[in-house]
Every structure is written in structure tokens, then in C-alpha cells.
Amino acid sequence: MAETFAAPGRVNLIGEHTDYCDGFVLPFALPHRTVVSATLLDRPEWTVTSRGETVTFDLSTPVTGWAAYVAGVVWALRDAGYTVPGAVLDLSSDVPLGAGLSSSAALECAVLTALVSLGGLDIPLPERAFLAQRAENAYVGVPCGILDQAASTLCTEGHALFLDCRTLAMEQIPFDLAGSGLAILVIDTRAPHSHVDGEYAARRTACESAAQALGVPALRDATLGQLSLLDNPLWVRRARHVITENQRVLDVVSLLHSGRVRDIGPLLTASHVSLRDDFEVTVPELDTAVDAALSAGAYGARMTGGGFGGCVIALADSPSLPAVETAVRKAFADKGFTAPEFFTALPSPGAGPVH
Image 1 (cartoon, rainbow, N blue to C red):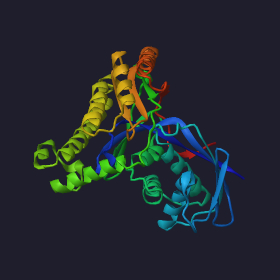
Image 2 (image 1 turned 90 degrees about the vertical axis):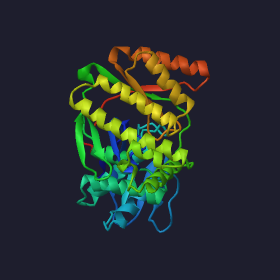
Image 3 (image 1 turned 120 degrees about the vertical axis):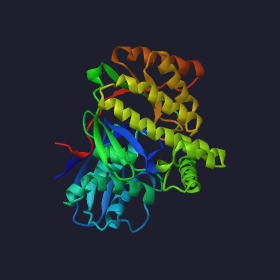
Image 4 (image 1 turned 180 degrees about the vertical axis):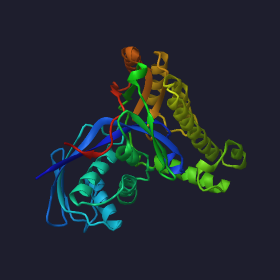
């Protein structure tokens, strides 16, 4: 008999491109989820169906395309010494694809949750996040950090997840938007979005090179005062973003602990400016959406995700959301961009069974 499991996409409230620098992140899970209907097989073979396409594999040969994310999870579990049950997996998802909302991690974590349950495997939640990340890094070949898989696995309803990406120490931070009369508006710019073209990997390499030049394990350990020791202007900009972004995460956590949700707005905007100017991962659609949202009264706005397309989040009073949407639509129309799409995001639960 089939069992059903789900894992969410995520919005990163703040802490962008810090995860692979051993830094701090603050994501929350979306209500949008990837759902897996899973049936046990009596042989080490996996059949997965999504959007009318079916792929069967046994890992004897490499799996490519979208099914590689599923095969990667099986491979990562096996590589870690677990006996993985064969299964028939039927996938569906309402996580927007290619929007920077972590549709790939939602897929990996949903499949992982299903296989762990079917196999009766005893795997703590933090280790599950690492296994899903390893599937994407080592099998699919995307050098992502731990943020997406940790958010999809570990988030809880009504909270943002404060995560130390070095130690995986975590804290659930109350994030009561409705109680403050606020909302997070997600603006899907629909700009083409891809990390696999080398830009993401280039940013990670620059950060690692800067840390090595400074003699620190990762940029998490660097200070602004050390930037003068770098003789590569590109490394200076990349490192400055990571160092200041880590501090912004800590500042947002402090404000949320104090219930000062509105006051995080300027930090969100400062994060976007840093991603635009120092990390150079924004595109005109992202910058336009941020500027339009701020002009319409949002308290703060920033791109979320890896950049080069994808989504912007805007923090605003709930009654002002229509005005923000109108301003962004008009700005996009004026520049001839594809019309954006919008939804509001509430902090939702992480991966688990669907009852």
C-alpha cells in the first residue's frame, strides 16, 4: 500500500551565499510542497514518475536529467552505509520550478523522507539534511551549501530556522507575521534562473580563495578589518558580502527575538544591495522588483535564493500588499519584462509523512 510524504520549498529570509562559507542563514519553509506517494518493492530498483514521465533505475549506470535528484538520494544513502529499499515513487509538486525557492531540495528531502520511512532507517534529521545535500553535490553535481536541504528538513510552522552552517546548531526563531499585521510577499520575477551554468560555482570558488588567502578556515572567521590584506579586488567584494551578511543574519535574529518584526526591513534591503554590488548575483528584474516594492511602502525587500533570476521577498503591512503588487507589475511592464507572479508566504512545517 502506498504511503505519502512531503517536503517544502523554502524562502531564505536572510543569509545568502553564506552557507558554503560556514556562516549563518535564516530560512523558513513554504506551504508549497513536493509530495511523494511511495510503495515498497522487493528488489533494489526504483521507479519514479513525475509530470507524466517515468524513469526506472538500479544505479548500475549513471542517471541524468530530473531523475538524477532521486537517484542521488538513493546513492547518498547507500554511500553512507544504509540499506535502501526499492520503491515505486510517484511525485507531484506545487513548488515553483526555477524560481529560487528550492524545488530541487524539496524533491530530494521528500524522496529521502519516504525511503527512510519505508526502510525503517534510523537517521537523525540533521544527518538527513547532509545526505540530501550530498546527493545534490556529489551525484547531481551542483555545489550547493546546506541551507536548502536543512530548511526543507528542519523548519517548523510559525518559525524561521536560525542555522549555523558549520556546526548545524539550530534555533527555531518565532516569526509571527500575522500577529504584527505584516506579510512576506514573494515576487517570482520569472527571469530565467540557473545555478548550473558555473556562476554559482565561481562565487563559491572566490569565497574559498579569499578565505585561503586570509589564512582562515572559511569567510565566517574573517573580519572587515582583514579585507585590506587581500590584493584581489574581486575577492574583497565577495568576502565583504559574506562578512556583512553574516552580521545581518545575527541582527535579524536579535530583532525577531525582541518581537520587532518591522525593524528587520532595512536589513533585508541592505542584504539586497550587498548581493547586487559586492556579490553581483542580481539581474535587472530582481533589482526592479526590489525598487518598486520599496517605493510602494514595503519595509524592506531583497532577492532570495542563489540569484541570477528567481524571486524577491518584500516585507510589508498586509493591507498594503495590493499597492506593492501594482507597483511591481507597472515597473515590469514599463521595462518590457515578463509579467511577474505573486504569493504570500507563511512559515510552514518541514518534511514528514502526510496523514
